[in-house]
Image 1 (tube, helix red, strand yellow):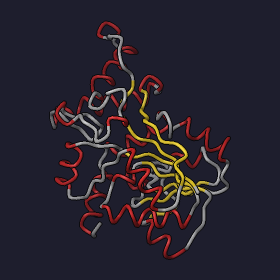
Image 2 (cartoon, one colour):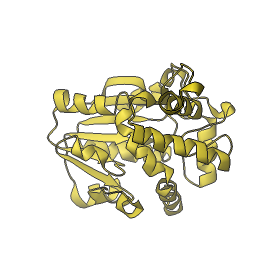
Image 3 (tube, one colour):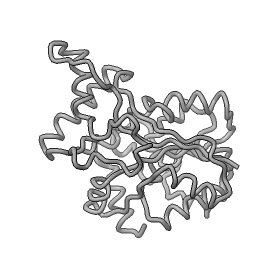
Image 4 (cartoon, rainbow, N blue to C red):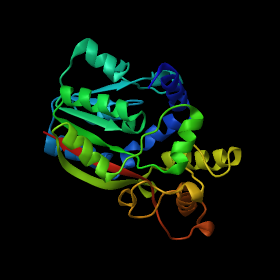
Length: 267
């Protein structure tokens, strides 16, 4: 990405709703609490680099984790933030660090084909294992990214196998994942509810918290959304809120939102 695109991406992630979403990370089915348990009990790395760590929420859960991000999230009112505020490429060029594992959630979606190549080139030089997820995306994601002024990279299962082969990595695991709102604390659910209901009035059909119009609710690879839950965020969040606080309006139904594609590769 060029300097203008990076600046636009920073502006995107400094938006209120993006820091809010960071509070929901532990509720992801593969890279949340379950991922922490897997990493700590099975992989047992001594050092981990969390690329695009945001408020650095996983530092307290994974020993030896260092978080790096383009933004200083403390500037947006968070009590925590990255250990390193920098571009991961600059960090590598300056330090040539080594880690046991790269933890990367979301960063893979931002950039061009050339950016993906450089990311994998740097990641595989720093660590023998990559653990994270990507958003399959759809027509609406690409359209909004272009409007916001930064490149959006859409993923499929085949893309994971392509990059693993390109950098002599083995795909250890690849599967769809989601966020389950029924597992959220009342505080976090209220934050989500406030976001999807207030933002929807400002921009009908879409909010930064994940509401998408039905015509946009199509993912690039159906294997990334076997539950067909893409685009249902507002309905699901409001319904779960009703289950807890407004039972007369509650209807039994889906509790999972935000389909993603989790993958792990290693050499």
